[in-house]
Image 1 (cartoon, rainbow, N blue to C red):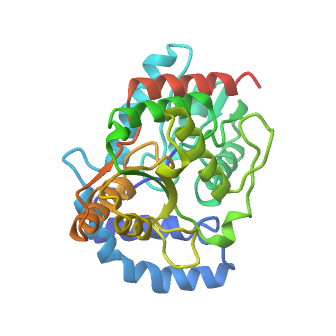
Image 2: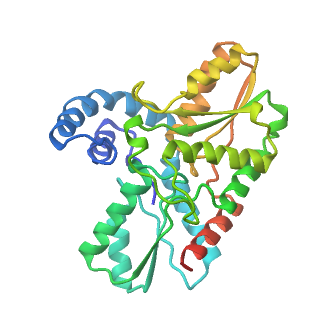
Length: 320
């Protein structure tokens, strides 16, 4: 499962998507009435045109990258797992929908079901809402299969090795500085959910998990602590996790770091936040302010090493 995307970059479809997404109590964790007024009366109406414009910049001939890349990943993972497995891809909001996938799973009578939200670090608005929604629908449809949950996987050795392998393609040693940019969340949500890590050894908040992700990848790459920073993007207010990625880039530019490599390890599939926000908007801002080069490391997307890593994570999960 992943978050999802509008079916088209039109105001109508963006309105539909934002309404579904922002009315989720785990995305905006406010009292029901306040959330309804805020989302449906203020946020959605005022964000539709701007968001539709952003999606138009993202859209390709194949449609939304998040959707078509997820479909391609599904096909590759199916080949990797073999005939003993059936792989489905579903979105928490929009199409392809998780309810439809679960209906097919029920009809085919599978004995074991692995739920894998594609979010390396656990947060209320990503991993948790995906698992809660899926399990609620499993119960509603009366699916009898044994259910296994992958949960967060940022600390799994294969994810770290694969992401580091992807970074190496860009020759990080040739850049002045490296930035790990993670999706931001409201500060108030950070401590609300602290799931166990991969082996159940320690609990981390989302923020702590992001810093741990960066340390693990940097260690795998042999990058010294003074050569990278961790920051958070996509903020909606100053009450979100800091430091903010755009401000960090400008700060490093003032320190003379004119060529920066940006990594986004909270996204395994390229989407609006990586392609438009980092690769287009941050790059334009960086160059405009005197920078020479801002390079985004592409998401793992459909890389064969990522497919193999996914297969191993899934197989290990089923052993517990």
